[in-house]
Amino acid sequence: MAPPPAAASAGAGAHNVFVYGSLMADEVVRAIIKRVPASSPALLPNYHRFNIKERIYPAILPAQSKKVAGKVIMGVTDAELHILDEFEDVEYVRRKVEISLTDTSETMLADTYVWADAEDPNLYGEWDFEEWKKLHMKDFLAMTLGFMHGLEQPESKSRVETYQSFMQDIEQPGTRTTEVEI
Image (cartoon, rainbow, N blue to C red; front, side, top):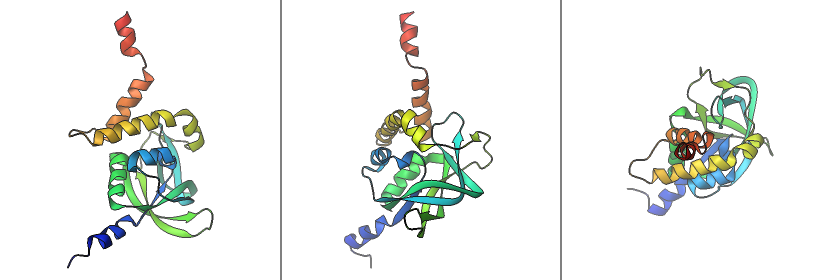
């Protein structure tokens, strides 16, 4: 016998998701899942957060004696986790990891998105959230809103395709206008 609908939906929000890049910005989370769940600062041990050549978002991979500062978003529903999977696209693989809450040192399991290509030669250095907020958040948020709108269309683009198209337009502003004016 199936549980009543209320009981089924109550269990649908049991996911904790460790975020370490653009999803640390509440505005980006709101654009993707239409709300900002409760969150807490957290650390992911034995991982490193990299810059990615020609990208403005980061990647994480396992790395001994390193740690990634981020936050854990709590109470993410199954449907919201599916949307986050779509957003992270094929570049990332969702993994279960153990994190520690910064405020209490309590440990918990959380899902996170690990860069799919551990041998990617385009990974370098260390990605900085504060720098990203100053330099890229506005454009990234616009791209994210465009991606979410596109998801509602019959023939939507992947997040990677949306990102590449959007960034090409930003990097070459006025290209079409200049060609027309000449």
